[in-house]
Image (cartoon, rainbow, N blue to C red; front, side, top):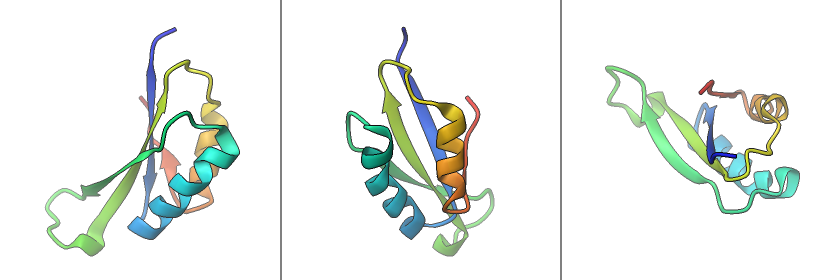
Length: 81
């Protein structure tokens, strides 16, 4: 199996931080997810930024439907590969 990277898109930093903390408990994530700020095109204001939670899935074992539902709990979604 090849390594897989999942991107959860969340509306703000607080949601991203909360989701990243809870991912380990819900999905047994092998390493701490990374948080990245994703400014919307043409927007310089930090308030107009989405946040990405980058989840490494080295064995490609995570359920993408469950990850999408998890992200939706914070008003986000799982970005399609």
